[in-house]
Each structure stands twice: as C-alpha cells, then as structure tokens.
Length: 139
Image (tube, rainbow, N blue to C red; front, side):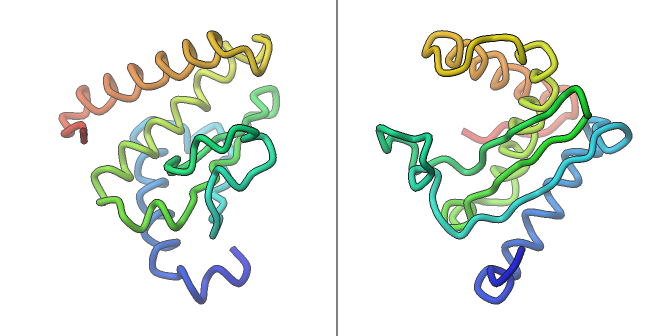
C-alpha cells in the first residue's frame, strides 16, 4: 500500500474489507491467493490504455490461474465516489474475472470482440451471484 495509506487510509481499509467479504461470499478465499492493490491514479494512466478511454474504471484484475493467484487493482480516486453497495458489486465483478480466467486464459488478448464477450459474461455472472445472495444490484 505504500505511501497511499496516508492519503487514502480509510478508503484502503474500506475497499479491503468489502473485497474480502466478496471473496468469502464467492468461496475464493479457500483456494485462491488474491492480492488487493490500491492505486492512487486512474486506469487511463496505465500504458495498456492506448486510447485513454477508461478513466472511470474502478478496478482491473490480472490472474495466473495455473497458480491460483490474482491481483485486483482498485483506483482510489474512482472508488472514493462509490457507495459500499456499488463497491461490493465491483468486487464481485472483478472476482468473476478471476473465476473466468481459467476458461479464458487461452483466448487471444486484445481482440475487441473477445474482450467484450468476456466482459459481458463476467457482468452476467456477477449479477447472478448478487441475485442468488439476495443482494441488490446497483445500477
């Protein structure tokens, strides 16, 4: 977490708590090692966003399914403006990327249609998990 703790301490604590609750709900805490990373910047600042189109992204996930490890990077300037309920849904959504990574790891990266299909499947899975848990799905 580094020096972000001073500026974003309470937000880091809030996101960590919400993320771990979602991980537990989904049963991922038993098998996967998932690192939560707090980023003081925006997703559009990252080098892979060549078009600078995703500044509103709350989080991104990278995985190594063969080792049951993942990293979820939360962008603190965006998460600060989101409610606990919305951030819980974001956490569930990102953790669905972890689950989907096992099936998607052989798909070619960077193909727009494939990325959109994977994102759509992840979103639908997150909504199903929230509904099954009896939780409201934020708009």
